[in-house]
Length: 103
Image (cartoon, rainbow, N blue to C red; front, side):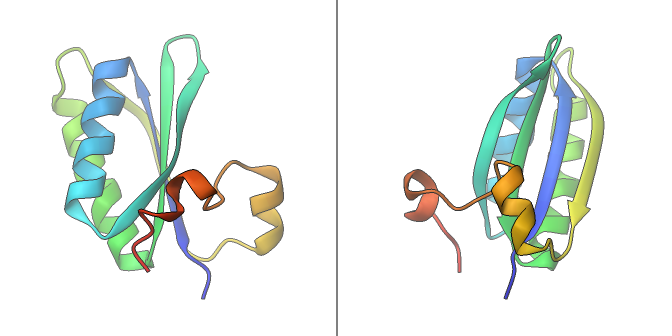
């Protein structure tokens, strides 16, 4: 069963940190990627079951917007991404994150 992907892009590091923290606490998801998108924008990506990812992204949006000086620029959830997407985007379960995989 393919795992859903949830992504949040924020303006500023405090917002992405708050969003990532809220996401992994709100749902049974695995944080698979975080990084700098461009010009002060950061991105965080989680994977898990669709309902868990949707719950996690909603909590991440709320936390990111509440962070001091933080702003959520955009967000999205992809319910069942095709396998070939994993070869192009950094959303794979790597060895580094495999130990934290929720299912």
